Image (cartoon, rainbow, N blue to C red):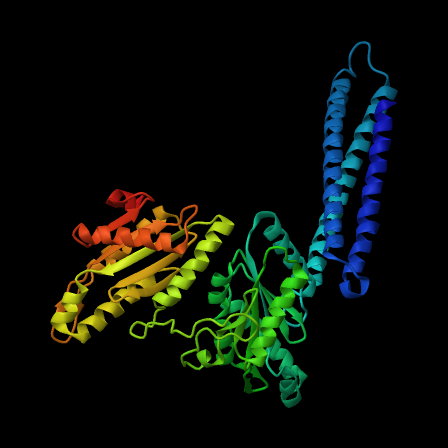
Length: 503
């Protein structure tokens, strides 16, 4: 009787499983086919996935119970069959009953397999419809719903763990006029092309979504403002230079962008509003550029002139707030940021390192005997040495690193997210690479070496303290005979051994 009752219960459970999988999840799926009309949210789709997962667990538990029960019954059946020819014999009714139970178990296992197959089919449909519900049909990019969900997740991580992130709003310039001139089908092709171009110029971890109409939104996870600026600075020139083919025509457009970083006490609407204000400033400032909202003022980071190869104006401010200094930020001889621009960036990065408890190292690189080489061979030698060392530095650093010309014969490198142990290896690789590369001019040959010093930001540091320690380490390397690396451990400068540099 117990066995019979168990089978009945299991059969009822399987009927419920199939009913829910077929009807309940089917309702969810029908609702997700037209998400805008049904008002279905990502939470509802997640509920469907959760329900499906629970059904899988239930089916697996039932299958395990039935399998174990079936195995026991098969063993009993075999034993009874073996004893059927004994002298005393066994009641044929008992053997028949056991046989029926075994057969019932086998049928139930087949039903389980069928239900599992249906569950897998439903899972596939849920994922397909969930992807459709989160994807813009025209561009194939994440749609507004996916953007809202991602932005909420990033904001939650920022509030809970202090993980920084940035948002950029992007708008195709004069899109209505473009549609009027070329037609809506051409406009659709351009929107697809702009979406592709944006994805090509940002990082794999960044999310490019179609926000609505001709507007896109880019979420840059785990990015402080300085890092995000370097990423988005490539977007406007690249899109301006791109051509989008439609019916034999090569079409061109430009875009404007507004960038903002999430701030303390801010919610999603507030962040979107600041990015929109920066976007409006970009449009007002001539379009085909990106402006950044730093919290107080909105400043231009990619002027339209930069896309045409001319020198951008430094420090432009377009809204309330103290205008930044008009002093040049670029060294004309090397094209790198100069000391003024570099020190501003150090101040910003040191503050961020303390706020987010992240690593930050600073490396100073001095060209050994630079004045002697310059005095002996003149400006051609000076230009060749500076150009070579700056190229070594630029080529060997990551995109997020900042390389600058600090003084006449000293370069500086800011290494975000890098502990001193790793900065030491970077310094040594640079030093040995420069030393292996003799420089030849028209009537001279130079053997150039560099002395490097490195320091890491410490609790309580300001930018001046970090710069002071890195300079002290570089001076110690020069005093030790040049062509070597010293680090400052917070108390004193000490030489770096080959073993430490390669560890």
